[in-house]
Length: 120
Image (tube, rainbow, N blue to C red; front, side, top):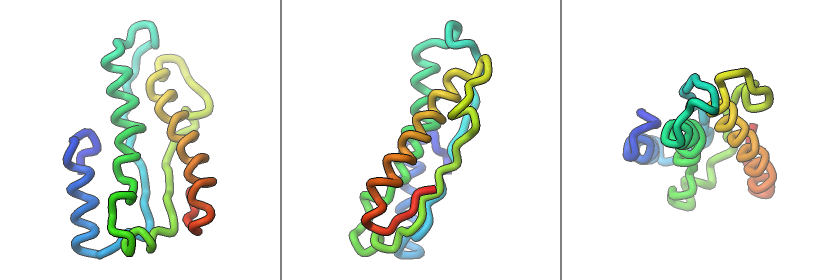
């Protein structure tokens, strides 16, 4: 699966539902490094980093699946980075996207708790 390809993620999710009928664990582990100082990074490059590392991970959300398939989901594992908490020089875009992932993970943890879905 190419997390940078618009249709690739959805095709992969559709294929899993077709073959397995359900998803019980979702692992989000997208990551690309764009190394440059924030000052030297173009807005286009920054937007690409956020899109490819943060927003694409959201594309794997099983929300579009049939209700019976979503009911099996019990774990969402979000692979982030210490750079989501501490930003080294030249890692501004990467750290910003990983910080966003940390925030999304925290939100999902609370929002999905009533449905017994654990977000780690």
